[in-house]
Length: 210
Ligand code: ADP
Image 1 (cartoon, rainbow, N blue to C red):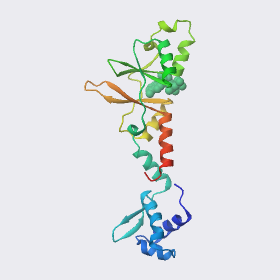
Image 2: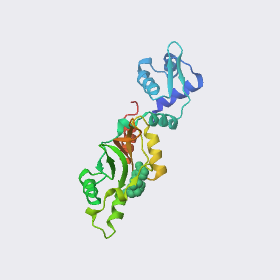
Image 3: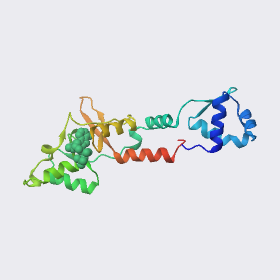
Image 4: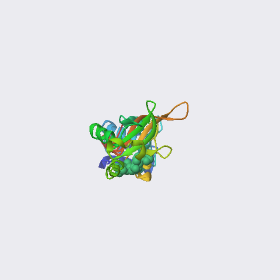
């Protein structure tokens, strides 16, 4: 968050002399308490300053980067995830290509028994399979998919930052959002992609005080 010139001055005063009351900050800047109120609200809501009743404002010592990291850690997968697009294990490579176009996604999750994750297919997996001489209708997607347990997943309560790290370290475009079933399988309940992470960044930029 970019601070205004006046907000910068307030932070400097509180840094040097905090805890300090709103009255005293106003005196130092030759302004009224009422004029300063919106600035103090912004500074406390964004985490630069903290306020204690009868004590006043004090500096939290956090840099803009630390505050940004805190925001990113607070945003959860469940707030930004999309609906998953799944296909059955008996679907062919041809079916998978059609489904990818119709649903406009880059990754399909392969499931069995109504939602249990067994594999994942990406655009390039399907391109690779299409380069061969076989009939695409006769090749089951289960032959070309990346399969469990080699699939990186995430959970609804995980932070957006954690999922971004997984995408970078594994060099992939998306993660299935899963819930563990009683018998230890993974049920697919969502999709977290680079687009969802980009949405979280835009949210932070557009809602700096949320
Ligand atoms: P693309 O292959 O179209 O560039 P990705 O980078 O997402 O798309 O996929 C790269 C490879 O990683 C593919 O073989 C795909 O099956 C596999 N893959 C995709 N997502 C995951 C995941 N969440 N966990 C493990 N492997 C994955």
